[in-house]
Image 1 (cartoon, rainbow over the protein chains, first blue to last red):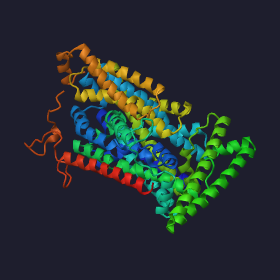
Image 2: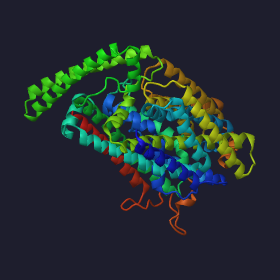
Image 3: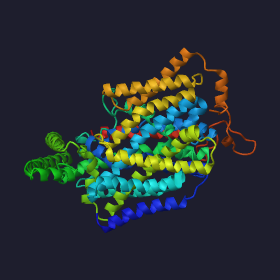
Image 4: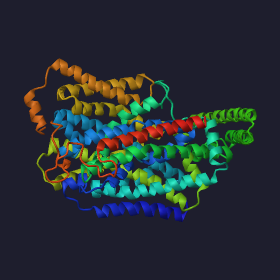
Amino acid sequence: MNGLDLLILIGSMVGIAVYGGWRTRGRRDLSAYLKGDQTVGWATIGISVMATQASAITFISTPGQGFQDGLGFVQNYFGLPLALILIAAVFLPIYRRLKVYTAYEFLGRRFDAKTRLLGAGLFLLQRGLAAGITIYAPAIILSTMLGWRLDLTIVLSGLLVILYTVIGGCEAVNLTQKYQMAVIFGGMVTALVILLVRLPASLTDALTVAGGFHKLHAVDFSLSLKERYTFWSGLLGGLFLSLSYFGTDQSQVQRYISGASLRESRLGLMFNAVLKIPMQFLILLLGVLLFVYYQFEPAPLFFNQAAWHQAAVQDHGTATGALERQFSEIQTEKKQKIQAWLDARHRGDAAAEQQARREALAAGERADALRAGAKTNLLAANPGLKSNDADYVFITFILKELPHGLIGLLVAAFFAAALSSKAAELNALGSTTTIDFYRHLVRRDATDAHYVHATKWFTLLWGLVALGFALCCHLAENLIQAVNIVGSIFYGVVLGLFLVAFFLRRVGGTAVFWAALAAQALVFGLYFSLSISYLWYNFIGCAACVLLSLIIQAGLGDPDPEAERTRAAGQC
Amino acid sequence: MNRTQPTTETHDGPGRPHPPGEEPTGLPGLPTWRGVYLVVAGSFGLWVVLLWGLSHRFA
């Protein structure tokens, strides 16, 4: 990165943060600080919901997924449109009618205080864990690209987002997310256009090569539970994951309850229901086209060049140099076979096309095996190395192929994505801690100004916890999967709580509370003993919570009608 | 809680309450929310078909 890149990066990120903080400074009213000024239109809500979900991980790791595994990951989002329809039709009108600050307040009104605290506690636990991961992702990029220390990068990126989120609350988050999404879309579209221009093959040939290497297998109707992404796991598991995330996760609920009316909130959700799948498809397609690009252009054996160079220094280039030469020879052979494959296709020689394709695939398998061997050696030499090399593919392309200025724009896009999702998380963590724990258990009758002050302190505290977690934790193979796995372990049970609240009116607080605890224990047990796609835990946790609630309630008998009437009147 | 209770946001004008969830969408050609949800579900179905077609075209 040169001075121009740094100017674009720092100027856009600090500029947006300062503007957001300045425009929304001095909010003393609790409703304005936690829900904005209630004049937000559907476009802002739609963008804000999208920006909250699409973290830096989405834009770094998803192209890597496309590069490595193809388009199959898009199935993960198949349940999302249906979930958003259900939320818009059922969840949202109730949240707005009850005028809640957090989704867990609804649990308190419907059931009792302990169930509200359980729901809020599960949210704080899983979102607090995920917060560390989302702050870590952009730090990897900046530390890799700029040669900065990782810990320093985590602290600097974390402090900026903490600052404006604490100052302006929900309104600052909504306001900055609009501008941050503009930077993100600008950067990603630019990268896609440049990649298309630089591809040495036509788009049809590129898709032919990608399809030949099984990268375009977007929809898999198999019923296998062990396949990580299938149509059914995406539709059912994704439906439950999305219902939990958008319907019960305060970082999302806080975005859409801030709408000027029910109509604006609903249209904001429908905006996401229509656009999310095409957006994820395009990001994955970017990764697939990167795969094709690196079939024609020289690709590094290991995309995490910093780790590779470190290994080369350690062995004085002996083993690493030999591996690089071997890989280069295979790549050259593969490129020739792919060219022969396309030439045969163009002249309509099916037999030659099949033969060349088989040879190209064989060369590809040898290249993959060499990469796997290199990765094993690197991990043996450095066990702390983050091992999923796919996360570095897009960054490598940006650094090596984009002109200065655009490098700064793309880094700014990653950084904007990190800040926008991080801000929403911190905003929600601070709000939930204040409303569901502090106001409920510690200070019931303080002024708005006091609660705004308390929320600011809790937001700061959660920001520091996330920073600490990001500095200390060792992360799983793939960042986006790590976030989804953490979410899937907890989300199903939380969703179960809400579904019982919405649809099973004969179940009371005690039954659902113990059912939720038992269901969470079951999910933990299954996670550590079974090897099924993590998406299924959303369904299992939810189903277990609902079924156990019915069984326990049957054992307890009908809930106390007087208590139910009191709860229905909105007193918890 | 009573989920059938009308909300203050379901009025289109003075004395003209709409059933919950049936307040006007303000979208041309899609006056009801049920219609909006059907269009959204239809766009999802269309995407699945297109993705399936892409998989098979370049298999």
